[in-house]
Image (cartoon, rainbow over all chains, first blue to last red; front, side, top):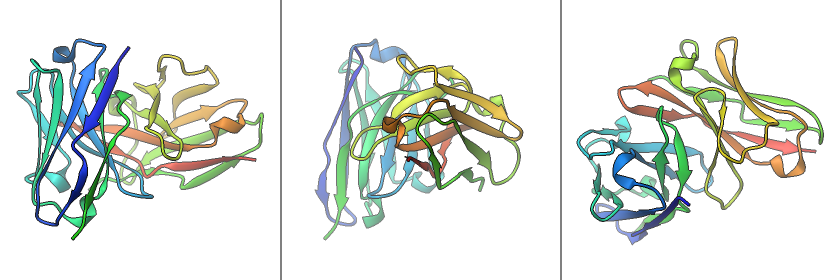
Length: 118
Length: 110
């Protein structure tokens, strides 16, 4: 069955960088688009970014463009989110999700917590 | 900037029917926005309920249904159960690869 496992979260100082990973299994990773979504403590869900199956096209939430970079390695069945110039308001649980068509987030990982604090 | 709107909270009696909505701060929601719905309980990852307006995700009971009602997308729960008490989020596809979540509705079953 579809399995998505995020990793790479932790505590980072403001202005720092972090790279999240999402290991995928149970499906042909190279044929599906993938999303990142985040959720700040006690807040709602926020869509972060989407990458096409081949990695050639990427989209970002306007508020995050320029600081976050989504990428993938289809040979490793892994999705990434590079986060730079981190701010306290980036503190959140970050989820990866498999797109199942029409930009629907069909399957979700369990999330990884990123805390931006000095 | 267009905002996706949802009721902040709603309550339903066990066995009752409730309809949650998903609108736009400007304009009407249509099937072209490919509305989808997600359920989340505290401490858990979201679960996909409905996609492409009214298609149920695998394993989702048929008491969950999606539709367009007037100028909004809607999620209807028929025969509400105690374990339906969750947060519910809609997502609208805005075009250009961009998706936007609504603020979520906290559903209480009592």
